[in-house]
Image (cartoon, rainbow, N blue to C red; front, side, top):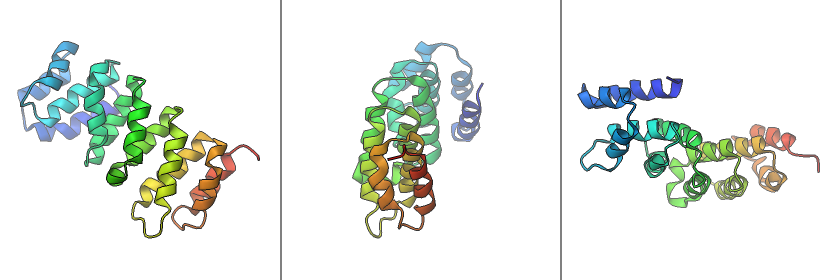
Length: 190
């Protein structure tokens, strides 16, 4: 059992409030049972999250849609678990979905984990999505500086020269300046 699964179990145990279904979902090795949880009506969110996480970490693509919904959830802990499972899932649709969530102007407050997932995936969609999101977040009085910082840090880790202009534009922003300078130092000389 990895650390992310232990953390998920600890967090959802209280939410499940002693339900026998919780113990069953945590212990089962039956992927079909887990997959049914994702589609059966009336299942609580905690049950769907356990099922999606376990299936995703096991490489079962039936978890994809549920994990993308959880990646865009208002609860940051659900987003962390979903991002972990999506990274392990290896579904080719994941980069496009993460890019769509990261660049959605109506969901910017929830874009932190999609941005981090894009960085981890290192997919062709990663740099354009992070650049576009960061450009938008450099506007005056933009409140989502944590998402902007994740973009800056991600672009530094990705080391793609296409990020140079937006990273330079981030230098005057006090909360982003140090990270932007560090990210620029990681880009190829040019």
